[in-house]
Amino acid sequence: MKLLAVETATRYQSVALMDGKILLAEKSQDNCSSHAGSLIPAIQDLLASLPCPFSAIEGLTVSSGPGSFTGLRVGLSTMVGFRTVTGLPLVTVPTLEAMAWSHRSSVYPVCPMLVARTNEVYWAQFQWKDGHVVRLLEDRVGTIRDMMDSIRQPTVFFGEGWLRHQRVIMEALGDVPICGVSESMNPSAYHVGLASLDAFQTGQVAGSHLSPHYVQRSEAEVQWDLKRRRTSP
Image (cartoon, rainbow, N blue to C red):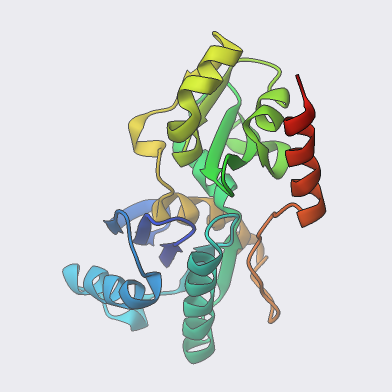
């Protein structure tokens, strides 16, 4: 099936057109300042480059978070709008799970990381088994220390959170961290598409009530953590 995939969870915007697992075209924009103003033109440019009419698309998929609140809302609302107009099936994919598809040949667990609040990250852990991704740890948000405390074995790290905190993590964990490939440091609409295919095949499409997957800690948790760090020796 021809699939339009969208990724707007960070400032790195990505749109892709796929035919099954085959990537037909992908258009990316680094440091995107406004998904609201650039997403629709990016999709139009992508389809025009092939060329491919919108009527040829058979399915829609978008990353659902965690990530930038505004970016997630823009991506999700745009694809919901397309679904309303066209009646096409829509699948949402957790952003960190989609990122795990960038290391689908890894023999080690993989840990995608995104930047959250100041000095905090989003992360999860996955393991590839028999061509399928298995979740080892649910999506979380917390400090770098929280993340490192969840690591128990050699693990592949990647994403903007890894790039920002790589030195600290390597100093603390020694030989445990394995740096992911450069192509995996930004979320990709192509990986969103790959991660959505099973859901399309089994009919697990999105319902009428959708909202972004924010994965935020409560303000009380944030304040408690700040207090703990201030009083620790």
